Image 1 (tube, rainbow over the protein chains, first blue to last red):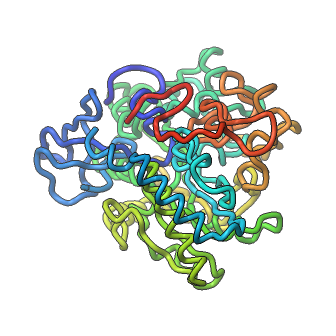
Image 2: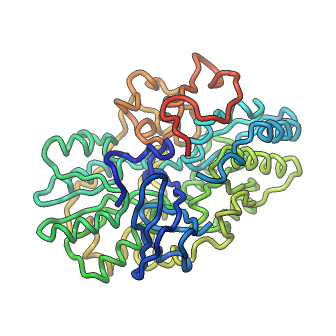
Image 3: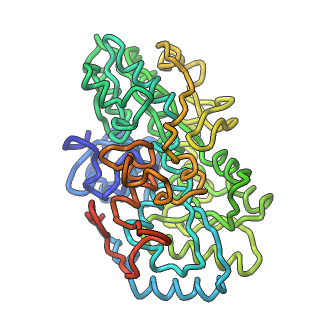
Length: 72
Length: 386
């Protein structure tokens, strides 16, 4: 899902998913199957958006473990 | 990333610190930050050096890697070493030592252990390898649990049968209750976890204020978020109030994320009891899969040793996780236990209090950590900005 290998601590100095802290991403494209393509730092990722209200391109979301948990 | 500078303004930080100093009136206040993400911010940005000496920040058990007992690591390795299994895990879990080594050691012995960023990636592996059994090592508090729940719902909807979850999800509220009941710790208030609260909302914390008389402020993760939360706590204490307040209103709705809570309730239920590293057995503190998800429950599908394993005698992670000991006070800190060769879990994860102290160089020869400098810029190794 995310590029690169190893633990993804390069973005914030902490592990992307191991800590109980979500990361901010920007929606690039909303899919029709409960997924969206987002920009996370200089990477892109496909995430699940089934737990948040309808999103549009440009929305900022907090994601954790590949799932959007809040629109901010 | 946008909107970061406004949360790292040194002049504003000084003004907030001055207000905290005035309100605390030199009375020592012990405030626990429950979340490992907050611990990380505190040491990355040197917040203890900005705060008056009267504020004693105590690090809580909110690092999900750190609270997992060694016996569960041994169980994970037992599953990973089964013939035909692909064992998928978050990166930090690879190096956590069990009684007979780590998952990384198991991989070196030939187990197929793979690093993923999401349980959905593990489900994708299961689709790609229908001839293999893919098991995801699910750990974490309520921030992480929704991703496991969503993955389980997808696995069931798609009928993916070669996929299962080794569930180790834990709950933050029982851990706080255990800390409040701990005889060796007197706390004056709590900095509440921001992203757990984004899921569970504000209401679960109300007993802490109402029944235990301790204020709680749910906080964001930027340096000024945490300083403002400390100020809000000190204002409450100074005024004789004990309430649940929300500093992180830009993210945390009072009711939490109802869809996430529903997904969790659909897929998981309380375990009667669960072992926490440093805190022992805590009733109703962890989740297991509901019986209807048994086909995706690794503990139902594979035999695991299920043995409780004592921590190495030199390791004092337990005291650190209860906030009874500062990391640098542990007798093996920085010597027998380093991030490269961790003895205890607190030194493994970047969210762990010991690793945060070690990586940002904030441990002195004695006494309070850190040099007397004020900085909101990241310090030490791993100093990339958000």
